[in-house]
Length: 298
Length: 267
Image 1: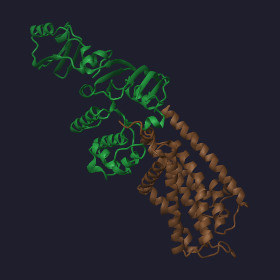
Image 2 (image 1 turned 180 degrees about the horizontal axis):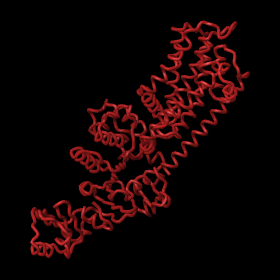
Image 3 (image 1 turned 90 degrees about the horizontal axis):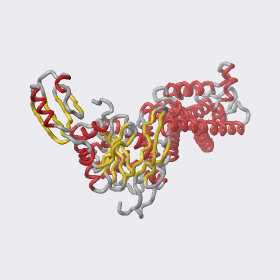
Image 4 (image 1 turned 30 degrees about the vertical axis):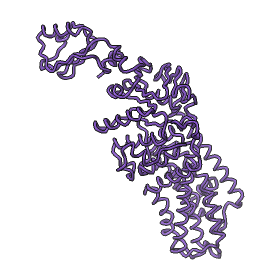
């Protein structure tokens, strides 16, 4: 097999006045586990839809295995979990999975697809009676049932509880480890950090970074200082400090700085009361905030 | 992944169509609001209107009984009902739930999806005629010759085809919330105005003038003729031509509505 599995070349997508994806060029090779990371509305979903041929690019082109993504030969080699797509509620889980298996040239056994998604106990349940988290797992079963070479997962853990999410990510990690190509969108940084070998950061329709999680973290020089204070946090407390970014949630303060020693010395001098003080290397979240800091984000 | 070269590029169409049709059939049947109205309603109307006078001649001196005539009317009402409501409302609902987004990302070809929908609706329509016929024969003592049964069944099924196009178009034009109201608002009065419940000559004059242009009126001539009732339109071949015209027109409308919807969502 030659050439990348997934390719966008100078791809743009305009909706009315909004340029959702702006001249994006990227290639994803077989076996890669790629996270597309970005705030809500950054263009992640639109990029995925372009890759899948669900939307036509306004300019540029999208290719799957070198084919038009609308080509059934290309679609037969991928599995997809989309945000907010519906499923027929009046079919049972195994009926729906069996139906989807018939769409693919070399499907997994129905039982296996259901087991991989952890839905064995719900096999005879009507789809409409599944919980939110079970719905997501059903989508995973449907995405896996064709034994795809490339798996597209658009915000797959939205709506899952903590335990469900942990299990799900474990499953995805295992699939990736077994050589499957996975393209995942998320706005959870720790998901990208934990899973992916490669992170593509998208903001306002542009790719602003495309490298390993470690390299992205390295782009942000400096240290993170976190502490809790019982004092009333006001502007004077942090005024004039050499900070790259600051975040105050309730009484939890997170600072990013290239001069941690100077900042701490000044905070002590000002008599700021600090508890649970931590100084550490920047994680992906700081890197992300620093890269997209053009506006305040919660 | 190792056997990439050996694997066929796409799944075979025939088993896909069989599975999809079966799934569509189950989806329809499991919604009581649909299956009960489709399968029971024609027999219920038959009980209310047809049974009391089933043995009487359609008009003084007629060979054909009211029971036979009304069986043909309700058979047509039933099959067209399945197409317009079954197709219209289920498609509108599926669009409302964004099921089309998921289907669109799979290698299921759109023609297979729609053929399966049509086949499943035809199966429900067939069941509705069987149930109605059994009811009319057992409770109403209606008797038809073997060739009359065959003609009635085949004509009613054939006449349902243009309504597949109409239901399809409504499913892509109406929203999920308005679909039941819109389809009923169109279908019920049309059935009435076409003389399916009461003979045309008993209806207001303006309706008698409109009736010949209604698809159900033309279809009604064909099914009445199959049980030996006299027809009002004058010529069976004209009625067939009209039905073919409606089929072309409704399917063209459906295609337009489908493309309009897809263009909005997937362009």
